[in-house]
Figure 1 (cartoon, rainbow, N blue to C red):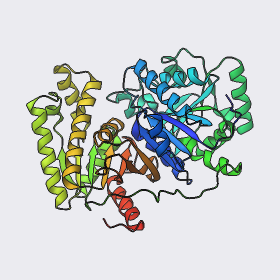
Figure 2: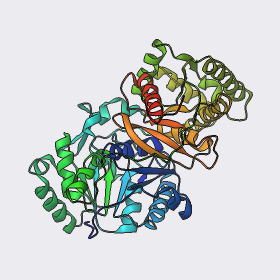
Figure 3: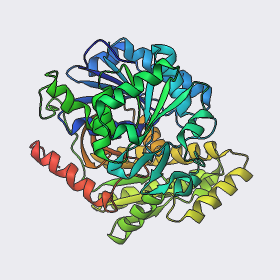
Figure 4: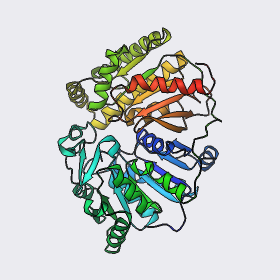
Length: 460
């Protein structure tokens, strides 16, 4: 549905926190000032930290929760953003469309359409990271999604690459397809096709896209829609359109008001993700000299009140703090082989936990470790891998939200902590989606962070 007000401001909602930084990092590359919040905050908090920014976002951690709760949290976030009067609403979910037949992507889109009405698009493609859609089927680096490693995602297994079918399990709304034959004819053809589909009762249209040129075409067709949904790809193309329409002119972000935290040269990486990409990054970092601290998840899944859980968390905290004080980079990780993931899930189920609960227990352990180490060592830089891990750690550190800067690698930007507690405010963070980042991400990210600190004229 087209909106009569020209876009000068976007209100976004994401189903996890690393995914939200992915979206805002894409905007940041074009000089857009952005801020995200962990969960829906009171209006006065949203307004206070949204001054001078063009994109305000709320993360819901809605990817793996109960579908009805995902719907509620998405709608609550959208209603809070509505009070800020955005011209566009952007629902962000993963470019691998990872979900289950029950949700929660369908619930997110339902919440948006129930609140705003009309029709919208679903564009999960992100060609810059190898995610493409052709004739409604989704691919990861040229492999059908349901034949890729994402099929075996520990929380959101993806077993159907036909997005019309998969999304159809999650919503009763009518779903259409704007296929590649239309997209390649240009923005006007796309606009006409979407309008025609909308008139026939289609409320959600899956968008084909196999290259960044296709994303650009779609962006030109929908830049003044009231509601768009999908990956972060459109955020790469909207700002140039705003500039062409003379709605936006800044070339560089202005975060001069942020007071950076001083701290140790060394960096702590908390890798809760079990994706193949993260496991390869873990292995590479260890080979490059990061101190090896593997969390024994077989003890963690005994439960948070157990001796096994407590002793393992304390072991990691003490060792990590010791090494960081020596100036050694530390990697705390949960897996380096797929077999370890399967073993942990089997043991967790024997203790009576669901897969979602197992993930929560491990994320909470990682959050306890991160907070205790940050408190002890006074770190000013922190990397987290995995959406669930990132969200739990940031909340444990009492963060309200993040200002999001430019990308280190595609989809993974630098972020600056917002907290009412000065002990945590001003930390430089990176929330890496499990599947994102180059092989050497843990090595390059600290260098980018240190360079930024030096450029701001502050000592490490």
